[in-house]
Amino acid sequence: MIQRFADWLIYNLFGLDAASQLGAAINFFVYDTIKILLLLFVISVIMGIVNAYLPIDRLRNFLTTRKLFGLQYLFAALFGAITPFCSCSSIPLFIGFVKGGIPLGVTFAFLITSPLVNEVAVAVFLGAFGIKATLIYIISGILLGIIGGWLLGKMNLEQYLSPWVQQIQKQSELETQEWESEKIPFIKRLPNIIQDAWGIVRGVLIYVIIGIAIGAIMHGYVPEGFFEEQLSADKWYSVPLAVILAVPMYANAAGIVPVIQVFVAKGVPLGTAIAFMMAVVGLSIPEATMLKKVMTWRLIGIFFSTVTLFIILSGYLFNILFQ
Image (cartoon, rainbow, N blue to C red; front, side):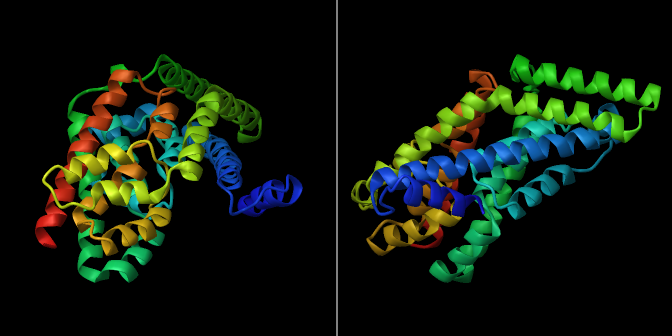
């Protein structure tokens, strides 16, 4: 429905050509802005309701004191794999998880896996590269989330969340304590929950607009042939180069898989192409722009560096297995 509205607005009402770079870029901007803001609002309301009936301290204590033997990272990564979100669409859930008291490492496991693996991308990948490559792609994407989330969780990075997020956490805890002590019925809590959700949307609005605008420009104006030319030679540095070239881009996994198929058909090694795909969907300037509202630059740097290292290792692994 959102896509139909964006198509009608840009192509019918404004009269832009769907085949033009400008039309594609503006359509992309309108669609993703509406989608992400709606998603953020709905998730914030849902997490507000959950927080109202599942006190944050209980959830946090359960996940941090119970010996789950790492299963919490596996569950978060699997949840990320079945949610069809790009990196920027995953950020609303990331905010909701942090607000809800879920440990940061578990939240990172979701944030890493969600853009890398989803059912649509798996279906396209299966048709393009076969079952062996698809299974390795799924397993490596989930392992990236589990190991990355575990490693980032061990670093105790909560202090590097932005003051805005820390304030949201404190406010949510105070509201939960107040509602529990006064036994306020749900119908009276709902206006506060909606107001808080709208406050979160307003807080990240400018970051969402800037991030998606950057992604829209890249989506509409960066020529695909440029990347094929740069990555066609099978050299030792092709994998890290692919990751570096992918960072300015922005797309979801389902949208980039057909491009990867073209890359491979034109001589780009499969591991190099997959490293490019993972970097496009898991590491992007638009994502970093949106994350700036919830993280300090230091935390963004640590997060991106960790994921970059794992993507490069995955690319080399694919190249070794599919020589």
